[in-house]
Image (cartoon, rainbow, N blue to C red; front, side, top):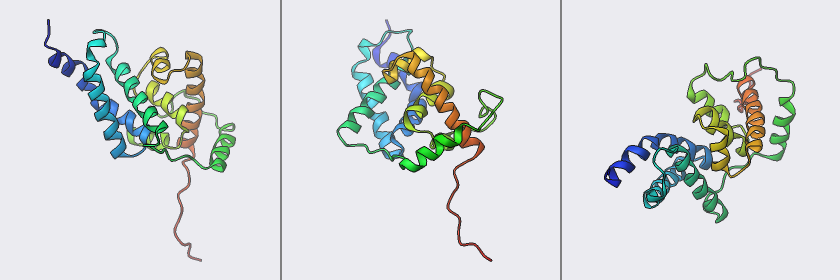
Length: 181
């Protein structure tokens, strides 16, 4: 039988960077993301006796992380930065005319470009896209993490990918400096 600390270390610690990236996508700031990851691994350590070896440790950790985030959000300890209503409406209206032949046009881009574009995808869709396309989880695993049916996962993925395609095709404009005449 393996020593529990060794088993935990080999099973869970390789996923620290993935958990950090997921936490950052949820919390939207590095300090809160680090707190989420720390709390996730503390709770995972305490509950490791409930983990079934051979199952997906990454999905298990992501579920813990997301639940901590939701709990903190409900208590008001985390405050996501919502998009203004007019910007959301504008984004939704701009998606329809976008036609991209590839299902995943972002595969050739670096992870930083995709992360920047994902910042402009509304939260429930961003989470689904991140978990599937960047973290490689199955629909079932995503449904368990987000606590939604697989059909909802597929719907969020479809819409999230459309938002992502739009953000990649036409990045949001940045305020420009004074113009010279």
